[in-house]
Image (tube, rainbow, N blue to C red; front, side):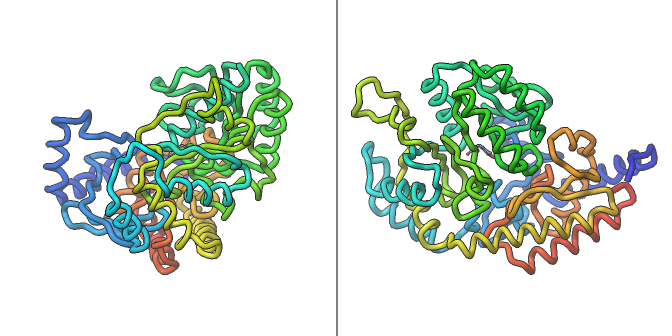
Length: 434
Ligand SMILES: Cc1ncc(COP(=O)(O)O)c(C=O)c1O
């Protein structure tokens, strides 16, 4: 559906009304937002959570549900941007954390649990011969990239325009974020084999690593083609650089991550999100000969610090999830549910000028007609249309991300998915602006 002048004014009016309804219905949220603004820039400590007129403020959560400070309940389709795979209060996770709490916090020493989680990860992900823990996916990627630079003695990293590897490694619109870590970068166009190969060859002797997500998460939930990803791996190898697969989000796409199904054998992978059971987590690792650089018993070892790298609560929650909850069947069903959601959304939203993207349980929906193979295909996505659908869905008790992103958790049922699909089509049909 094209955006005519009439559409634009209808959209502006409907959006203003929807924002006002949101604001008026949430006096507690509004007051707390005012207070937060006194002590945090814009009342915010995690930029992605902001949306006008003031962001959701959640008081408590259970199962698949979140409850805001004004008492509104929502089915949480965002699943903490993939970290909330186990839902909000699975007893297996909570009991594991309680048990760990009973043993005390902050040992300033190795503990017994880090070894168990490390082994679970090494057995799970074929690329992972040796692993190290961090506190976030951001740190995991910073460490992996820094390791590649140290290992190769080269300065640059090749990344995707539209790739996201944490707040300090964010790329889009042909440049890096102003607050990025100051690495020299070579920007590649996702899924464009010819131009990316040429760019890699042109800088072959400067590149320490090629870093890529097999499905762009933050960049619009866009899958990479196997041919493209394998070309990146081949070119990295040919250049003497490391191939780093950022599996922080995509490791949920299969019991062994996304790499094996795509025919990829990364030198290093980075992990995060749900693998810490829903607590703060990151990890990086891969080839034993490369990771050996961190062996502190060896002279000249690289340092890798982090007070909370092996914190017992994350270790306990991560172990519990992988041991008791995330069976291969459960994960495969989750991804099949996401595939069904995406395919149904794609056909039902098409008449309204929307399409759906993603892989498995990572689902995007966008106000463009598609197809979407690279972030530039989203250039015409109207932020106003995104926001209006977001507010309409909140009003009906659904919480995706404002940018049109869903990461299904194990707590979201087939029935939830069916009801969500019904509501999406109902609210789109009801809007004259769309
Ligand atoms: C692909 C990818 N890499 C890295 C990160 C950063 O992880 P964290 O937010 O834990 O720092 C994210 C977070 O969304 C991500 O999606």
